[in-house]
Length: 78
Length: 276
Image 1 (cartoon, rainbow over the protein chains, first blue to last red):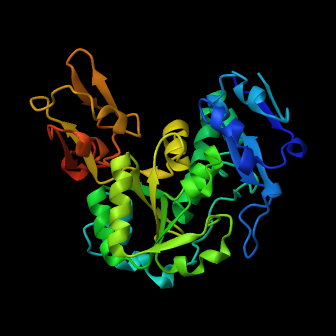
Image 2: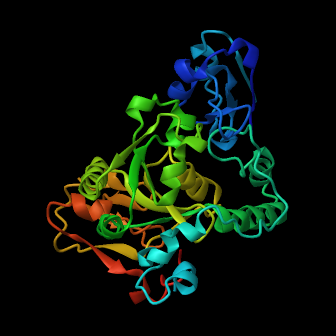
């Protein structure tokens, strides 16, 4: 069974410096990317980074990421 | 026969020993993009081609959809960006003729773990692309550090001792531009290859073999395998290697105090010669 994982970017201002969800996930399901992709000639601000579900097939539904998020930005449903 | 050697070795014993595959003239030349699939710019995790729809197809065992997507993704990856496992010995030989070499941050570990730049200098870029690193601020976010050949050899040797696998990556095949130092589960290429069956990472030119007469059963090799090929036989009390799953990196062999694990040439084993 694949989960639906949503991360509310508005509640997640600086995943690059927080990364609690990335580090707590037992199977490294989540990933951090940027909303602009790898853009040339321009530094990417920290607020352009985002977290999303990537490797859904390894999600056990433990909800550790939901509990670890200090901003209640993550929802996981199975 | 390794198809990359077949196409690009041009008389050298391996395609990655051919200096032409690191030459400036290849830098930024992109081959025909092939299948009409586009990377998703906001899918994080260095897995922008392996998207939700592919994982859904795997989940519902839709073999036809899986085969088509896998084919499209692999064709694009092999044209543009894929890797092959190399032994430490071969990596050191490559470093002997490539210049410049620079240490930089690992994009996979940043996306998988959010690893801070200062803890994340495990990736190496090489060749003329390094002179243009400022153009890719996301990739080279932590900056880069140019290394002398001796420093580069020292760096990969230490990373190998830590248990990281050396891999060479193309940036517009056959242009080789990166020496990555990878481990499961935080290397996107290993993850995609092992977990999703999409071959971003090719096996190397060797296969590991255990000599049961020499193996003492100490199990000190077991943690070294990043490819789920090595286990411990409780019955025999020996290390057990699935040679069809082995990527030939040699990490288990270098850890063995009895020298019970040897690397044999993949081409010397008829049934493994075409298992990549």
